[in-house]
Image 1 (tube, each protein chain N blue to C red):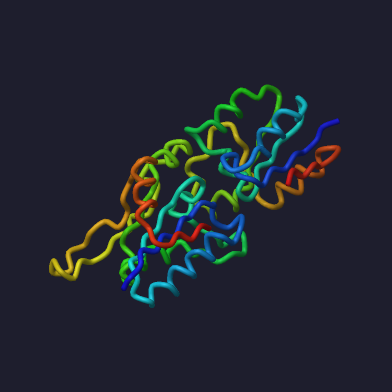
Image 2 (cartoon, chains in turn blue, green):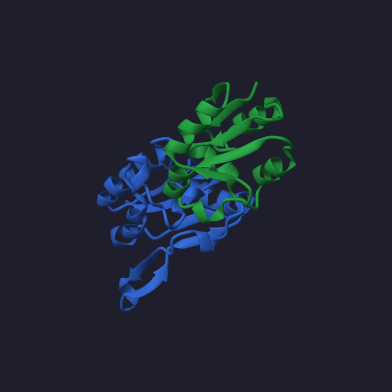
Length: 133
Length: 100
C-alpha cells in the first residue's frame, strides 16, 4: 500500500546543502510509487524563486529541476502563505510549476497550492512519513 | 575605527543580522553575503531594520543575490558589489569582522 510521504523544505538554497539534498531524495523516492507531497515553509520558500542564476558563485543551479517534478507524478507542492508574506514575496516571485493530468486528456494543472499555516498543519497531520530538510 | 561586517545568514532563520546591527557602530559597513542577501530585499522586517539603522552603510554581494533570484528585489540605497568590490571594501576599512 502506498504511504503518504511529505518532504518538508525549510532552508534557503545554496547557503547550505539541505535544499539540493532534499530534491535528490524526492527524485529517488519518486521511483517507489508512493503518495508524495512537498511543502515549502520558512526560508524554504526561497528555493522556488524564479530567475536564479548561479554562474558567478560556482554552484550548480538546481532550480530548473523543480519544474520536472510533475513528470515524476510529484504534483502536490504546498507553499505556506505566511512564509511568503513575511519575506515580502508573493506567488508571482515563484516559478510556475505545472503537471499534466493523464485522466483529463493531459490537461496542464498548477502544482503549487498556496496554503495558510493552519491549512498546512492539517496537511502535515495526514502524512504517514515526514522528512524534514 | 571603521569596521566591515560580513553577514552570511538569513535574517529570518538566525539572529546574526540583528545582533550585528545592534553592535555595529556608526561609520561602519555591513556587507550581506550568501544567505545574508535576503536581508537586503524589500517588504520585510529586515528591510525596516536597515532603513532605521542610522550611520551604517549597507552593501550586498551581487553574485549571491543573482544566484538566489532576488537581484530585482533589492532595496534602494544598498550598494551592490562584485568580488572585486568586496576586496575593495575590505581594504578601505580598518578591520573586517565576519559574523558566522
